[in-house]
Image 1 (cartoon, one colour):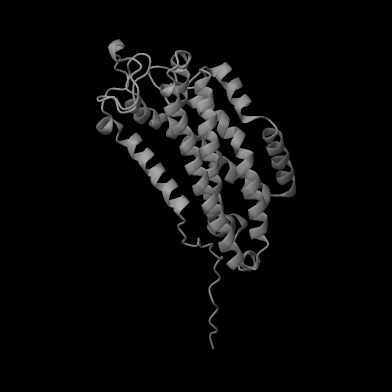
Image 2: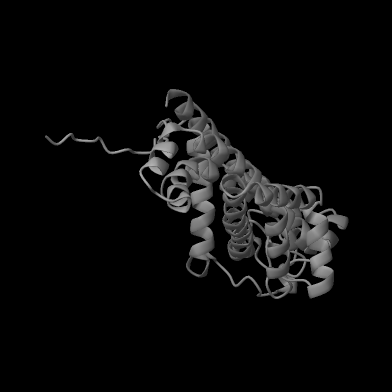
Length: 288
């Protein structure tokens, strides 16, 4: 007589499908920014590098320049669209690198031997105590300004944030009965970790990544504002604010206010989506 053994499955976290107005508006705004960045060559009304001293410092609402021009006559709307590419690409690279490294470190600490947990935890504490922006400045001082060096430095600084979360959640997940069941059935620790524990961490990691994206955007914009980020002829929103300082002294600040507001709204929209995703994960966890 054969007894059917039910297949063991790790519990999967399901997000509650709720769409408050704030999350919908935030998502719509971010979608608009992404479309502007991807299709900038098609949507931009002017070249982002074309100068015209006769059209310098035109106010917003001008016939040929919807958002006005800067002190050299460059169209602000076109520069916003092209600048969105590096402004979004940099934080995305930081989040991807920090997430991959943080997941590897966190899982190794949670599922590895005790000495590995102690060593990796202490290493994360050391990196965590070092300000990310200061680390990026030191890296730029060694390798020079640009996008790659600050991006890698911030990824290293953000790795402990992800690693701590992954380690804590992996320890909680490893205490569930299904993990012991798979071990009794002969499955290796690496297989159970990658095949079953890691997928259950994805929703929380997504919420964490959304929040980290906003911080990375602000940090990279700050570095560009200080002249430590992207260099001309490339530009992002932070460098646009920096280059608009002479116009501010002339009493015509819109060339700095517009990219500043764009950074602010983008960070707020990302944080709203991150908070919504995090709260959805928490509610799903309470029901599971």
